[in-house]
Length: 438
Image 1 (tube, rainbow, N blue to C red):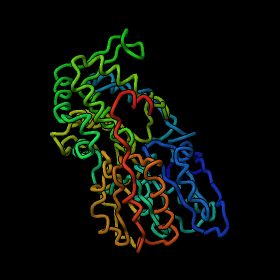
Image 2 (image 1 turned 90 degrees about the vertical axis):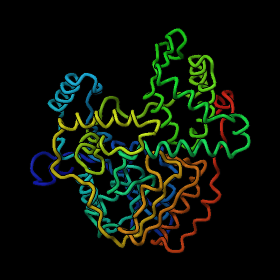
Image 3 (image 1 turned 30 degrees about the vertical axis):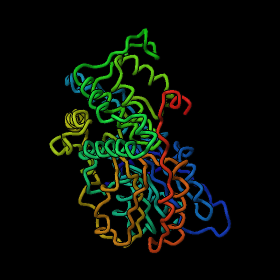
Image 4 (image 1 turned 60 degrees about the vertical axis):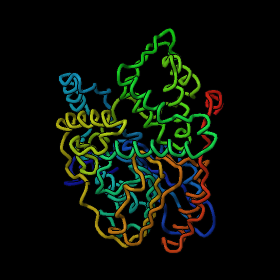
């Protein structure tokens, strides 16, 4: 149990779930690995099975998993909020949620979580620790380092962005760059280029069509049995999701060609849906409120519509609509008692290893530019042909070996990074049958 209000340490306490995976081999080291989950909103404990490759690092070190307040068993969830098209309904929905929420949302910030982690580590009698995290987990690590610098031995950032870099405002630019890179790689790869020789023209035809009018799949033709509508924002969101993973990036040329060159785009869309394995639903339904408190209070996460870059990006309009939604909702969200944000980064001698996918549409290597100004003992590495979600079948062995070596040495000096040159690119899907067969 930890105090909900860490500022005054008065009022109710809240439970924090903790799991410790003991070191599995001899020669146990005193510094454990503390894993920070992404999101914001993911439970470190609930996603253990997804992060099994990382847990192979516990030969000589314990692994400590600590659920962030507001996630996992202590998840704070409200019914889904409507769009900005009905401002009155949106306002009513948010206000109703806050009235019935059995928690003081002001205290569900990254800074409060960082202090929870420090307290739990003390209770477990650990001294210095090795931080490892991905995506928002990499953000949480940076906040922890700022707040508890003497606690940190090393810090590994996977698919992360510097705390003083506005991540959401760069989404349009970074997503367009990632898509352009996929097209360029297809043009360089002989089989992909033969299959889709006019990929740019296919994309232009697809994008022009969906911007003129949404594509509508009637219920009688829909694989779900319900009418489905795909407008430009829906297509942009789908492309962004495909860009997140190297394997699904390799499906983009096929999807673009199938839709862009089709005379009957509804039939083509149905064919793609039928050939694509259904995605598994993860996480709680509705809105997790901890992530909303974080995004509405922490400067690194403020989605300022006036600062969006990349107006020529395929997802600029959808990102702008999303930013406007946040601007409206955040006016209704309680102001945090203590928030973490930009300007917090300070110079630290802690060794830092940063790994970013070259084709990440959210946290590309450029989002770590300038890291050495804060962390002179840092090493920033780009993982070839990878998106945001590191594919363990492609780069996992290399990434794990790099982290293992880094933890063993406790330094980035003379780290052997040669395995990155051998990370394979996933083969492009060249037919719907191949896509269906995985």
